[in-house]
Amino acid sequence: MHHDGRDVLSVTHEPRLRERAVVFASFGKILHCTGWKIGYATAPAALTGEIRKVHQYDVFSTGAPFQAGIEAFLNSDAGEAHLSELAPFYQSKRDRLIEGLKGSRWQVSPAEGGYFQLLGYGAFDERDDRTATADWCSRADGLALIPLSPFYPEGENDSKLVRICFAKNDATIDQGIERLLKISNG
Image (tube, rainbow, N blue to C red; front, side, top):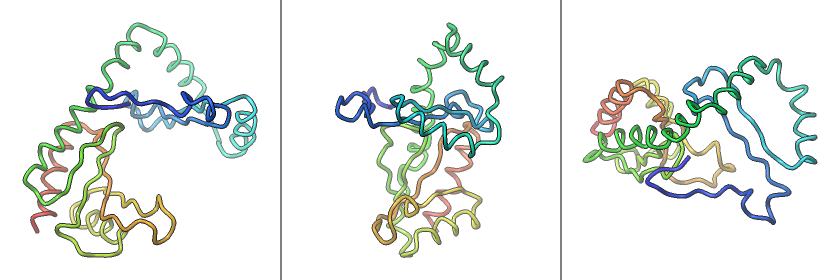
């Protein structure tokens, strides 16, 4: 999913990568049912065989009725309409968050796609421990801010960035904005 009319190409569009690429996706946010924990993987047959070996021992249940329901919905006119409205729907959520943070000390570069916005906090927090900063925000104001450090090898990410999910209802986004402003304004 992309925002602002941008086209995003999958690695599967590159012939040299197609035979060794695996694409994972989740229906949770696409269908506004994050608790279902249902997604999919696409890959060449040789790779899906290996994925199935792991999946067989890793997943307790798969929610087969939900899978059938999702398939039926996505193949319907309503499903097609829903998917066509998805990017504008989430872009409006992203824009609401960004607009609410204008003039604050949070550094914001609009996310080009997805459901998460990166926020820079270097202008008001000098901590070197990214996890401690996110933990502090969670405890102080009940915000689930995720530091980027877990996504990098130890010591390789010195950016003062956290990510926040904007796949929320407007009231929750507005409450989050209030809390983010309180944090950045001290």
